[in-house]
Amino acid sequence: MSKFYCFLIVILLIACKQETTFTITELLNPSNDSSGESSLLIDKDGQVYLSWIDLEEDTISKLQLAKLTDESFNNVSTIASGSDWFVNWADFPAITQFPNSKKLLAYWLQKSDTGSYDYDVRISTSEKSQEQWSAGKILHNDGINAEHGFVSMTPYQDKMLAVWLDGRHMTKEQTKDKESHDHGHGEGAMTLRSAIIASDNTISQRVELDNQVCECCQTDVAISDKGPIVVYRNSEAGIRDIYYTRKIGNDWTLPKAIYEDGWQIAGCPVNGPRVDARANNVAITWYSGADQKVKTMYSTDGGDSFSKPMIVNERETLGRLDICFLNESEYAVSYMESEGELAKVMVKKYSITDSIDQVIMIGKTSNSRASGFPRLASNDDQLYVSYTYVDSTSQRVVVKSLNI
Image 1 (tube, rainbow, N blue to C red):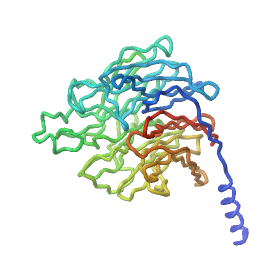
Image 2: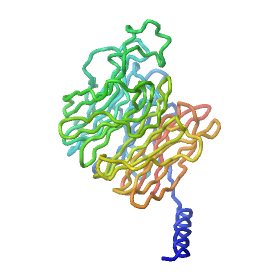
Image 3: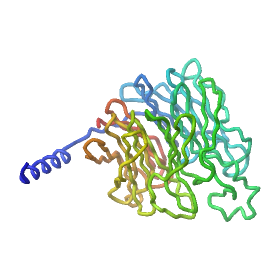
Image 4: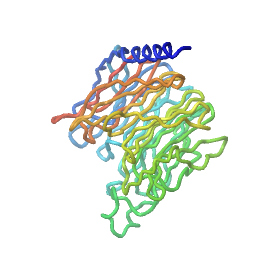
């Protein structure tokens, strides 16, 4: 092929990419003007769910659930509520669905003592209908008043695989100078743990995956055809790079850096990685302050090997990531770009097969912590994005959809 025709093909590809347009539709939802911490779920039948926290009377937190019908979320039910919850912009509840069942599982954080970071992970399952939920049960079994959170869950075999950060070794009693430690934690190490949850709320196979990790960054877990893969931020020798571990057969692999960014920081950056999988394809995204970049890489062999990292953001970024496969060969990464006191909610679409990417701005919000972390879910090339819109008087959950 001549150089002229090669050049012409490149120009045509660029032109096609630039002319691509996306129709973004805002979906009505019943969240109040003091809401946030949203999450999305698409069940095995294609039903789209939205969960979020409504704050009422400045003291009562309510974990709400609604279903999408005709471009509006309706049929609101309350999963759980309380005046003693730990509600945090970065550590939020979510729902998921058991395999081969209509039963849902929800989790949230509830205070266990008076310390700022003394809270437990509570789980609950839907009963006869998704308007009735079981009493909350504590996920972990250490019985220590300490930090437990940053949960991720996914269907696995006929049960649920849960992963979380566990601060049982970080109790304040171990700290001589309690004010000298970032986030008010104790001296011990934060650990990464996992467990298996059955549909009757029975919890088994509790395992420590890593004995020293970053104190307050999100974890994530996905299942490829080769098994589970867990991603999280490590803190070995003050280097806060992204690590992963995989379950091969009955054993978890030794934790390994997904890429050596070499980000050294004294405190926790509260900006964890995200992972998703489809068949043998695995995609990961993460933020590194070493170069202020959001990166992504993918695997086509279930996590045995990965591509070189690709830079996601084009402008200054806050990170705050999510990732989701659209089909077996395409996936989307969401992130937030900083624009003064505002932030743009962005989505970038990647194709594993042809390396083409496309960028879409979903909306704007505040760059404050209250705007939280946007969430993604996809169904037959329809992408759903939820985030918290914040202005000077209120904050509310926003959900948008687009054909992608």
